[in-house]
Image (cartoon, helix red, strand yellow):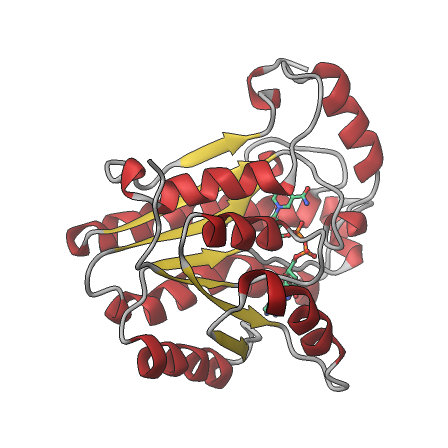
Length: 259
Ligand code: NAD
């Protein structure tokens, strides 16, 4: 049985009730994990309030801290809080990404240097950075899960810059799995089918992509945040103890199709 009781799980990337990270947090909680949540702070504190109101009652996180992955001090402070409050970390969910709009439509060759480095820093580099901060706290082994998309292995209309970020992310998963395996820390990615969220609404033509998946995928639909959450809970559990360095498609089967 899938049982995460006694496990401490830090979840990044919850912005609202449509976030994939929210689906994951709820399923980890349902499996018995003790939750910590990070949020992206903004000047007026609106994100903090919104995320706090969303998570407070349903999952009662024992840690709730800001963590902008472009800010090394915030990363360190978040993991210091984990060390002080929990002593050990078992699960890290990396469920965040960002690319400027200019990188998500139009010509790939027109993407600016600045947009390119920002997207790669937030969406790709951050996995290794957070995994490195988690490693010393995963002293009883652990599981790290990140979120990717098919646009990291195939040229999907408008996914452009994020496709490069996801290709790098998937390769980071393999290198991190190789580094951390001897410490019994497993690192995997879930490649989710398209879901309507704040981040995906920035990708040009996302609704067309969802409709296409609904017509073509073997299951004739796309997936839900809960289905992705269930797969994440599995990867974080002892049921997946032999799995590391993998990209698991949770996409209603779309990836196998030739169209
Ligand atoms: P979302 O907008 O709900 O989540 C994106 C999160 O990234 C937000 O919580 C945001 O605060 C966070 N973020 C952005 N910049 C950050 C920074 N500098 N520091 C810390 N956090 C930052 O959208 P989502 O679709 O749930 O995205 C979550 C992950 O799932 C992303 O990696 C995305 O690429 C991936 N994904 C999404 C889909 C989809 O169709 N929605 C499909 C496959 C993979």
